[in-house]
Length: 210
Ligand SMILES: Nc1ncnc2c1ncn2[C@@H]1O[C@H](COP(=O)(O)OP(=O)(O)OP(=O)(O)O)[C@@H](O)[C@H]1O
Ligand SMILES: [Mg+2]
Image (cartoon, rainbow, N blue to C red; front, side):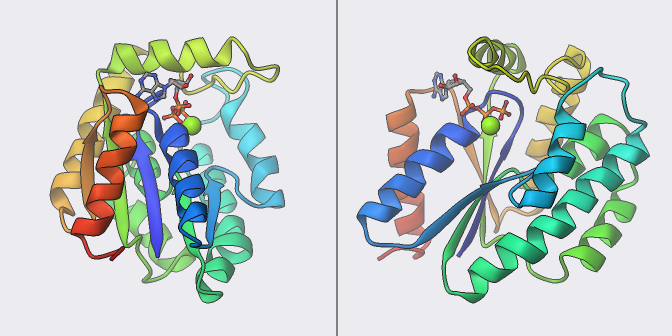
């Protein structure tokens, strides 16, 4: 079972991925919790290049190729292996984020992104994707509040302008609409425990858990 958590900044993806991983452990289900960009030693090095530094550090194509360089390493060394072992994989951001941020956000051709996906990941798609949806300003407020407690500030994308974040939110909703059998939109504007209960309910409804 391959589940991805997608959505804009500060929408609660990491919070919910962690709560679900802990909940699955209590049900004796083996789950690997991982994230993008990153999730393998090589990809974590590339993550640092992507999420720190100035907003205009990378041209959009450099950004796409760095994202896919990281994803190739993460896929080969973490996700593919875990799925082969029969483990669940919970991935905090995956390829939909590239379509939303570099595609809808920065204008990269979607067919080109699809071609990268096919050549690097192949035909495997997540079994289920939660798309966290939240007012853009509220998400950025949450993300900025969280970063105040961090020693290394991973704020490069958060610092991009509000129109960019709005395009991303709309982009994610479009992605979810186009692939509605895979994606479930989660209204992220409620208490974390309530959102977790909704996620568990969806897993039962979809027959992922019985
Ligand atoms: N449902 C919620 N209501 C209010 N605050 C929340 C909720 N879920 C998470 N938070 C808080 O908001 C902040 C951002 O949450 P989190 O890190 O899970 O978001 P994220 O989607 O992973 O963000 P990013 O895109 O920056 O990685 C954290 O400080 C978290 O504790
Ligand atoms: Mg996060």
